[in-house]
Length: 150
Image (cartoon, rainbow, N blue to C red):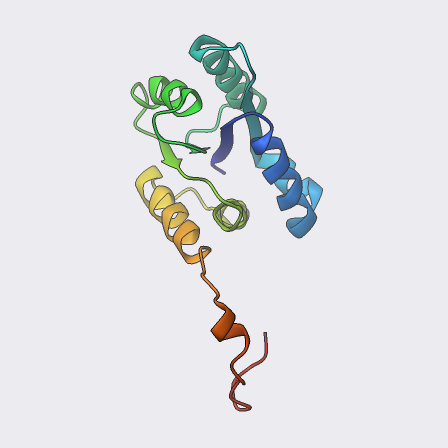
């Protein structure tokens, strides 16, 4: 199984993990995912140490996927210092709820054959598919009775 570390500014990582647990179940999420947060007054060194502790807590998986909130932010930059030293680690910036759910589900079926680039591509695709605009007109247009209801 690959490890997932959600690294964000503030409590966002904890919140998105809690939400994921509501959908998928607490045991399934906590097994292979860790939240790392940057607190006010902390710097990159603090986050790097938290990442290392999270990786150890996950049992030092061969592959680690960092899902960060913002490219170029401290959590992302701290993850970069670890990724640059291990070809089996990767980062996807712009984490969102659909992305995290999809990657936890991917963990559940992981047989170890997907490389980190494949996992990153799946995370990006899930994140994009989860962003769906809905307008006033779309919500107020009568639906086709032959279409499936949501």
